[in-house]
Length: 206
Ligand code: GRF
Image (cartoon, rainbow, N blue to C red; front, top):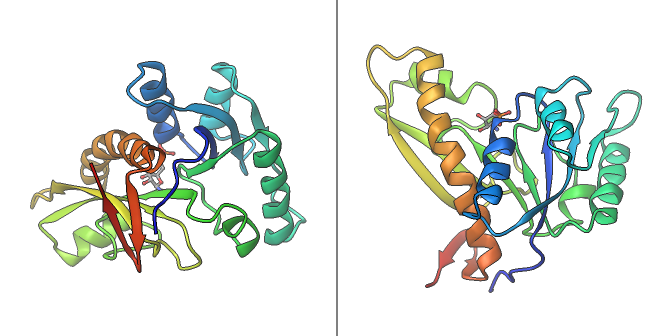
């Protein structure tokens, strides 16, 4: 099945530092990525990424996750994303598991970046997991979001070496350089209309 290009307006969901969001915004500014940011939503009022989005003048929304069910949070998020005319949603360090309410509102339109070569080391602390396991290569993965944690179809991956003396911070920093490059490439691929999905496999055509 062909993945249609859809509209190029991105909704970003983040919870923290927001360096992936900034990299996407920078790639848009430098015209390396033909897209626009429609809204930045955070479930953390003091997320540096949200502050940065405000400073850059983006439509930025704090959604309070307290005292609401995850489903209610997600249906409010869907409303905001729709009101903002978003065609694609990018999770950029969003530390909350999505419910079907949000996942099903944007089928094959929600992307996530994870700091490991999935399916190895899903979940939290992927870099520590990789070091403890003793792998010699790690990296990052951009994938579509489905209901399994970090388990959706893989769009693209980038690898980095793991060195014997690596700390979790050193490995995270090396992976992050690739994350910042890879996420915009993946968004561009999805928006290009060149992607096809068959089972779990994403095929990219010229
Ligand atoms: C990144 O390592 C990303 O892969 C993971 O969460 C981290 C977010 O970092 N999902 P940032 O907030 O984008 O700087």
